[in-house]
Length: 456
Image (tube, rainbow, N blue to C red):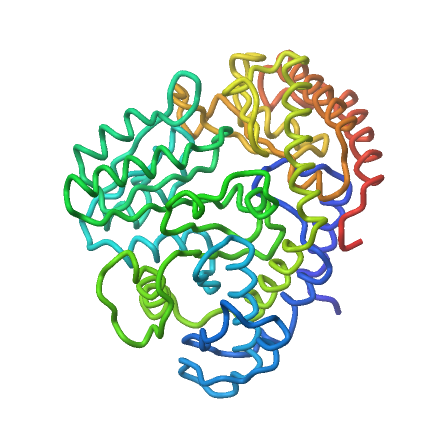
């Protein structure tokens, strides 16, 4: 008798095949990444780290063949070590980093590990506020991070760009240990150079080393594809990211850093030059136990795919599709935060566009097979539980092969649903419009099935 779980997995596969995924933080992995995730590497325990020798100058064949002493607590690591070493080398090459820790289980744990590596409890971290587009792990009061460290937050301007004047003013006032640029609902490209100058000036005035950190979880794939600037090229010390989203990898985290690479067994001096070592010690044993070896293997496969020329074409297409979708949405009466997008992500002010709230609109779009998420807007009077906006993006639909012509069709479907919501006025009354919704659902399904999932 088949476990009921597998029947639900089949149902989820059908849902993904017959709908269009517009949530900007979701994507589809390749068959090779799926194979690595489902491999027997999940059977192994590997607390500790491999040897880091040769990762900056050996080629992949040598890394994959050489068995070196390691920093592990368990035996039987000769294959695990080489897989993790390949993942580290590929990540460093992809992002121009001196070191990469590929063990974080998520972006949230990657961020916490960096905070823990550089800060003492109670130290100040300067970050973007959640209402302005920041992430929960950047100091939201409901998180453990906010109970350990003191987060001071900056916002955005009337043009929905980072308020760099406010950032500089707050940095002088609170003298943070970390200045963090990162977000989960922001449509601009940050001015990394300006932030680096703010840090450098403050460090010179105070005589204190300040860590520059970028959480690029949403745009890491765009950075890897050379269509978005890399903060590590502009004076930042650390960059964190998830490995899913635009990188098209398994769910997990990654920490990239600039500085000295050495054994994590010996506690180093607390300097920015030693931040790679401090981070390794903070990940294990500081904030995590054993790594997930099957996920690290999938990360290694992902980074290998992302180094290929066709990934650059994919990243460029994400941007083109996002710009086209934004233009089509505006043509169909939608008001966009920032009047468009410079990356993969679009924020719609649905309340001021069609007089409906974000959660209602999200659920209505679910009924026709278009998946996105309700999202609070900067200074949203409705708050995060009943937000005025929705967030969408193009990474997943671009992976499936949708082009600019499909973007205009998606915008028209979204307008049709918005008009239905206007008339229905509440979720309870959507059933009165089931015939219209069913016709739209059939149209979405027909287009979706023309663009198979990568693993079909």
